[in-house]
Structures are given as C-alpha cells and as structure tokens.
Amino acid sequence: MTNYKYKAKYSIMKTIHIMKNISLILFLFIACTGGSPHQQTKVADHIKEPNKTQPDDKNTHIILTRDQLKNIDLQLGKLSKINISEHIEATGALGLPPDAYASVSTKIDGFISGTQRYVEGSRIKKNAFIAKIINPILIEKQEQLLSSHTQLNYLRKEYQRQKSLLEANAGVSKQVEKIYAEMEMYRAKKIATENYLTYLGIDIQKVLEGKFTKEIAIVSPMSGYITSINMHNGMYVKPEQQLLEIINDDHLHLELNVYEKDISLVRIGQKITYTVPALKNKIFEGEIHVLGKEIDPVKKTVRVHGHLKKDRPNFIKDLFVQAKIWLQDQIVTAVPQEALMREGDAYYIYRYIKNATDDESIIFEKIQVRTGAKSDGYIAIQSERELQHDAQFVFRGAYYLHAQSKLVSSDEVEE
Image 1: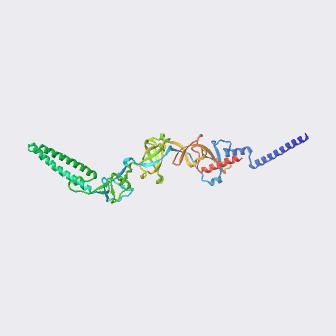
Image 2: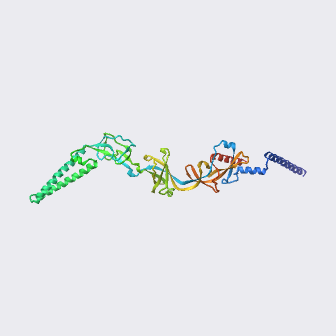
Image 3: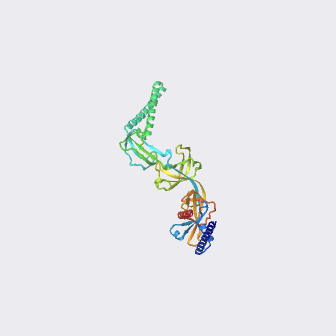
C-alpha cells in the first residue's frame, strides 16, 4: 500500500514538472514572436488554406514572398467578356463535284504527235491544243463523204429529170422509184459520214472543197489544272485510254466526316474554320452547305459538305484537312488557357488579393471554376461564386502558384 502511494505521488510530481516546461516554452515563443498564440494561428490558417480536412472545391490562399516573385514571370490581368462558341471537330479532305473532273482521250485510234509542253499542275484553258492524232483512215472517211455528196447531187438531178419525163408520159415510174431509193441511200451515207467527221472535229466545208487531213487535234474540254499525263509522241492510243486528267477547282469544297454522336448539332449555314497541315496550318473559313443522309457503318460518321470562303488553299487531290464546326455564338467570361490549372477533374484560377501583413509577401486566392468552349487561346469559365471583373487574376505563371499550393498541401499532410 505504501509502495502504491509512493508511485502515485511520483507520477503527479512528474506531470507537474512537464507542465511547467511546456509553460516556459510557450512563454519564450510568445516573447520571440511579439503576439498572442491566437493571432498567430489565425494568420497561419489564413495563409495555408485549404488544409487536409477541407474538400478540394473550397477556396484556398497561396502566399509568395517578394524574392520568389522576382524569379518567376507572373502576369496579372482582368477577366474578359468575349464572343466564343462551342464547336465540334471533324476531319476530311478538299473535294470537287463530279463535273469538275475531265478525262482527255482520243476519239479515234492513232499515233500521238505534236504534244505541247504541259506538265502535271499546269494551268490549261478550254479548247487549248494538247496534241494531234494521225490515222490514214481519216482520209478514207473524208473521201466517202465527198463521194456521197457528189453522188447525191447527181441523183437529185437525175431524179428531177426522170420525174419530169414521167409527168410527160415519156418516162417509167419504176425507174423514178429506183433513182429515188438510191438518192435516199446516199443522203443517209452523207449524213452519217458528215456527223462522224464533225464528231472528230474535221471541218466539213473543207472536205467538200477537197481539202483532206490525216490528223485531228486533241483539245482541252474545259479550263483547269492538269493532274495527270499519260501520253507522249509516237505512242499508239485508243479511245478508251485516258491521256490527261483535268480538274476545275472553281467549285472546291470541304468533304468532312462528322461523328454520328455530333451530327444532331450540325446545321446548314454554320461557320467552319479549317487548317491544311500540309500547308503550314493557315486558318481558312467556310460554312456548312449540305448534310449527308447516310452513316458510314465502319467509321460511324456522316459526310458533311462545306462551301469555302474567298481565301482558300490551292487544290491538291485528297488533301487532308482538320476542321472545327462552330455551333452557337455567345458572350462569356473567359481567361487565357494558360491561366487555368488542372487538379484531377477540377480546374482552378488564381486571384491576386493583397500584400500580406508583413508587406514582404503577396497573397493569392485559388478559385475552382468550370470550363467551357475554347477560342483563339481563351477558354470560357464559370464559378459558383461571383467573379469580379475588376479584380486581378494570374494570366501567366499560374503554374508556379499551382506548384506552391501543392507544396503547402504536402506540408500539411506531413504535419
């Protein structure tokens, strides 16, 4: 019993001794800091928010010393009201309607001669001379026309003579009928040969004057650019061969592939901005003109056609483009994209508050926001609290504040 009382007394004395030491430490701490423990804690809490017991969506405060600010490129700015709109992205190519393509071929078998010095990419005008086809059969066809023409003229005169004799009861009706049949036969031959030579581009009047030719010209069916050449002098060609391909880019348009999930948002007349990566990403403009009516079962996309504005790229067949289809314009609050910091699924911006009480530090407030559409380096934001448009926000250097906030949070966890 005596031993128990002695132990209890020893324990009480030890506790009193520890409490005295704690009181002495607190007194020295207060004397050194020149303030009360209550005031110092409040300042610390004000600077270090949020702490580990607060949810991530609470506003927090970050402090930087003036020495730290000297080493970072921190730029402040005010919130902007800009015209921005949601957009969907699509890919595709520059395209042309079917009537913008023309295949050049010969109308008759023969040998190529007299080709002009065109190369792929050359501009060519409608009816421009390209080359000529040589074939002796042309002489035979022209002779047939002249022969039919001459014989037809003879038969017409003979028919009139025999008809006059018949009317004077001096002729035979059977003879008149025979001449008439021959006349009709030669007339048909003449018309057929005449049409054929006209199709080949041969001047009928010159043939009837006895001026024959053994060659015909190959000419451009339309103005445009030459995209392929498959001929040379001395080459024997047939009508089914394509010698050149010509395209007319007057009706150049966009052929975009829009995903099935986005097609309900697309309307005729909506603005398109697009870039051609092969042409250094210059931004061009257009607008939606036609919406496709069929879904690609493999790609799950719908074809959308867009008309181009005046400033447009040069056409290269199947040239890849990246496009944005703009949905609806609206005036929104926005900040530069580099002012926004991401933390998990949350986004934050930083507002300048004031100088700290020691006048050697700056306090910033970390504010959670919701993001919206992007345009020209800006992004729309919204917050549950009202954002003051005359306040100063960190537009450049937000990364350093974000890193500092992570450091503060890490220190609190260690404590």
